[in-house]
Length: 515
Image (cartoon, rainbow, N blue to C red; front, side, top):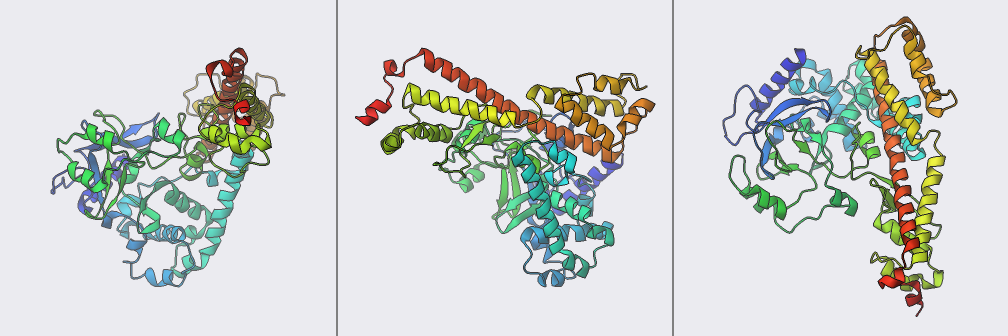
């Protein structure tokens, strides 16, 4: 009930400050939503989000948030009490300034102009920087573990740098802690939207209720969406809320990498429907292409189907080592650039210059060359998998048991609570890596005694840790699945090459290059 009242207060405040999903200049005094959008819960797709209140057309403007409602450094400058203190710390980054400003507004309590918005912000986040040591190690992959540690170190450094400023503006003692800084930083990282005049971005009340959806598959494979030459301003003039313009045709002529942006001529952040939505469907926002590790690092969630996900690989000592294009795609196929690099790697040095044009045109050089490239990828994937302490199948079992633990504590699980749950949870051989990992977690939180006594109380701290552990296992499981899919794909290609002759199909050969 309190949450519902808080949402109603936010929507009333939004209407007062000019946030609107309606084409009419006069909106409802009790809510800024209702014409195009409504708040709804989507347990299997991001939790709380925005649903279509009616049928929405592709490209249709569905929400406006005026400039004055955006929380950013510009709004800070309007606060005469805070501004002098910030001016004495010009070395701080834009993000540090916005983070301190957010904490300062939280410290004002109900006297803050932003109060109806601030009280609706999440109390906790699951970005990588919030992971404890056990949860970080559960990622298993060296790059992911390194990213987690770097993220934490970066936030600790930024927090220490701002201590002088936070004390000078008299922040409350509890807001000076690293945990408060971590919360504010996670809010900034996961909820800010891009604005042209501030690289820290802005917090956008109501607009940040949209959940994320990844770009289309073909856009992620190519690395970027193809942008047509149509002028965005002329497009916007043809698409207004409630108009009967041909939105479907507009989507064919203009494609956005993101579905919203600040528009100077209307002085508001404007959001558009990225496709046609039926009434009740969740309306998503696409704010770029991210790997699952990047989503976890900056936003605290994963996508089970993320065409932007990839596994970077290094190809040869004499190729470019730091190159984002050298990777395995989520569907298990080596990227175009990876195949090009491998085809040249297995081409004699003296022939590489001549073969380069063919390789970078996506053409197979010879059956033997392609077989060598595919075999290299298979060996690479096997090597990466063997470095990890658990297998794909083990992670699947562990994930199932983590889910069962969550159900057990929420009294949704019907299994006996007199200790048989612990026996059931460890019924596999103790030598398996995933069982050892689970036992370590149980011992860390004293859960063995809970299962034996039948206690089902789940503390918030334990629930958050279970949730983050589950995400770590989900991430590494998807990582391993991509590698396994790549092995299957490349092995199939090798088998196909062994039964066919590229020469009989007229494909260019290294022999032709020699000539």
